[in-house]
Length: 488
Image (cartoon, rainbow, N blue to C red):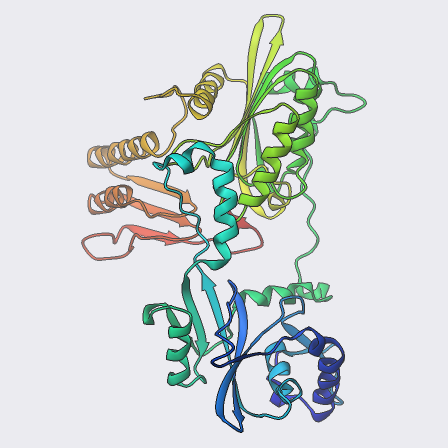
């Protein structure tokens, strides 16, 4: 249970007050605000207290940043009459508020109010600017350094804060009234994830181990030839996290150690900090295999990590590209070119998920490994577009965004509308991360008005309104919420 500090027993409060003295007080930095001490910089996604003090010279404000190095939910010792196994938590900011007199000796603490700040962390490049365009990596570094000083886009306070202080904060943070959110609930609710670390296996899912994909592994009884022969015989569909991402790692490892592999090309969007893929790419390059990698530097919040990996790959002689001007390269693809008795053959892995071994354990994604000639030719053409100056108006099997994907989706929707008008029973089903494209949404409305039944499984943002009479009453929208994040 989570209780306000004021509702804890006196013994619990005394224990937490002592913990404040021993563990919290030394970390805190009270920041007074007056003519000589300007309003301090408030960092992104930080939780803070604005403290109202009475001094000899009058009422003053001070700011106390809630340290992120201490758990937000502070466990109190068991109360005398608690049931066995009962755990009680209170909020860190309330423990600090109860002890502000120790921070501001000689002053009277009149009140303290929590607030939370979110800054604009998007990196917006002017890709028509020669400086931004000529050295994208260095430009990204500069923008990352400035991210902490982005404008405030959200100021959250609770309902206890007086309007006068709210408006003062809006002014001090150079925000607007549109950026202000007053809530009657927990600020920074994402911190509730901390409670997942409680040692209560009875409240958690049973441990889950993904199934291996042994056909993709090289071992005592399996050689590189066996791995590639298996993919030649049949396509391999892997469904993460139900099937292990290790199978994809094994495929790349087999390619990097195979003397018959002459080229490896890969797109990398979100890698993670300890990627098992990088050693394979470096090993292949060290063996004189041609290795080309597109690292998307504009992957949101992974920019620094991707810069590190890009530089590491370049140090080992890997050809590294950073993507197309004006676009994010969000596709996930690997191309392996292998010399075989009947000539060169392409092996491909394409997927909905990132090449990230960590997120692959809890993101639901699909991946396809294939040696189909047409798909291999398509992915070859795609890499020429991504790393060179090629253009491609059409592919044999794949659809790419932004142009081709939308066009083909509209064609498929129109075809189902036509089929429904002829024979009835029209039906469309989509599973997407988000649905915000106006052209596609209008096409789905048109399908609904024509009588086609439409089911949409949307993980995130959905700008389509289902169930509107005469407009979208044949459309149903679902969101799957469960153990794994639906990402395919």
